[in-house]
Image (cartoon, rainbow, N blue to C red; front, side):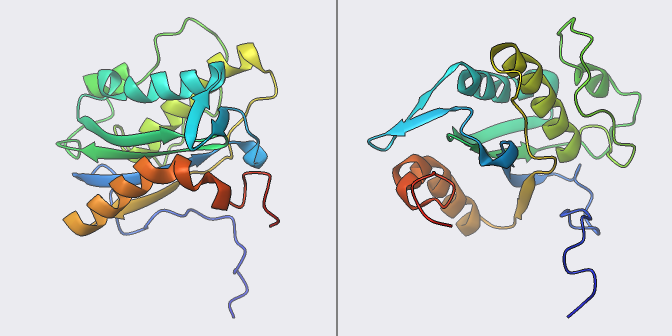
Length: 188
């Protein structure tokens, strides 16, 4: 067993450029798996105000990143799942118009997160950082304790079978909430 088994390094595939064209399955968790986004009743997600922010700002991603297409997305009580499809981003430079558009149009001076110099303009990391940032700014107006886990999980979708399986997983996720270890009803 390696000594760095519990390291805090990146979950990203180090040999992959996350600006590459492709489909990415992304999961973003609320801090401490807290139920900030609403609740599930009878297999249906009922969004509260913060959950509505999470959904609304996800749907706005293509307005700020023209090279992104969205596929299935769901807000759960304590996390979100979504598929981003990137097309034609790898040629962007740090001075591109798309990068300038990434900054949300909020006039707020609040800075959440910040720029990570390791992220390339238009990459999955930049997209998710900006999404988390704008949701946080608005969510904290409703609940000052709102937060995300610092990292997010992603999976590069490599073929149509995997794509279809993940689309179905996202669509059916609310119906499977009772089996989720973080729903607050199951023992971990």
